[in-house]
Length: 93
Image (cartoon, rainbow, N blue to C red):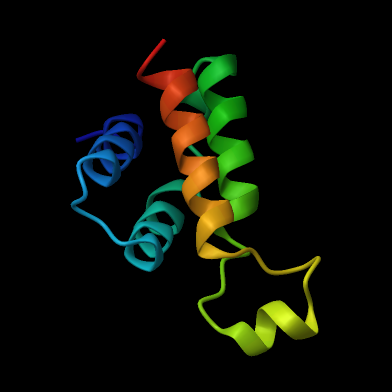
């Protein structure tokens, strides 16, 4: 399975309730980084996945992090919205 296929799989699996936010974030990071699959993605896909990555890498399940650094860390709700936005752009065209 290519990295592109894995990224799409993660979006679809999350939409189907197969992943919790924290698990999705870890899996997404493992696939997307450190070797971003530039050669596999067209510009629109790359932009959507990079936008999602900006939110995913800043997810924290800890309220102490969110309260102490509200502009640094992202909430579960923010991650869900970012995943849904990427899904809407890439899958539900």
